[in-house]
Amino acid sequence: MAVVAIYSSKGGVGKTTIAANLGWCSAQLSSRRTLLWDLDQTDGAGFMFALEAQRKRQARSLFAGDVAAQTLIQPSTYAGLDMLPADGSLRELDSMLLRMGQRHRIAVLARQLGRSYERIIIDCPPMLNELSAQVMRAATLVIVPLPPSPLSVRALDHVVEEIRRHTRRPPPILPVYSMIDRRRSLHLEALAANPAWPTIPMVSSLEQCAVQRRPIGTFAPRTPAALALMRLWDGIERKLAQIAAAPVQA
Image (cartoon, rainbow, N blue to C red):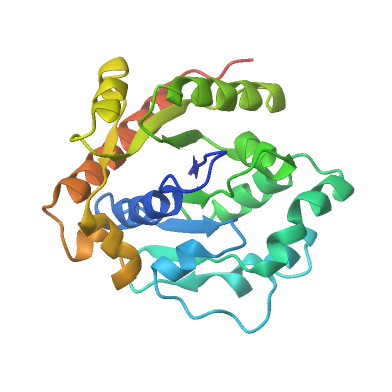
């Protein structure tokens, strides 16, 4: 089992779109039993997959141990992909985790969920707090979507420092340029500065994911954005294989 966290301290960088599409890639392209776990109270991932909102807001109850994860998990319409949706009850989750004093609560839940899933994709809220710190402690790999600007490296350094500050063994971090427009000189400069970083183009077909409420691979599989996301997932799988094969440090 591996936990892939999609994290950014800044909103509006395509985090949820990337998380939803990677969840689909994991289940459909890699045939992995996959759980897309939404920790953002806005429930963007659930919206992307056209899930009906639950009448009871119970997402927070999972962390308190009041409900079992199986009662909250919903199947998607795609084989091998299930959802653990968010709701407004997560608004105070950060303060709740602090009161509980259990620094590895999310990691414990992830291990329990890992009995049923090979890949857990976590859509994180855009903030730096106890919740994000706990996600980093649970993560096998962290994907950081970044806007294409000269400040991207600085933003990434800030995220790396936060992760190191909150984890004894920081997980590997993969920066990804999101919403790339090659017609803009500023974007081209950012690409030239970090040519090895994966890139996701800013195109209308990717924006259609929220309109059609389904992954881009289901309606525009040969578009540049779909191919970029598939390449990104392939790179993630190769990185996870390397992590699994690496000797465990004492």
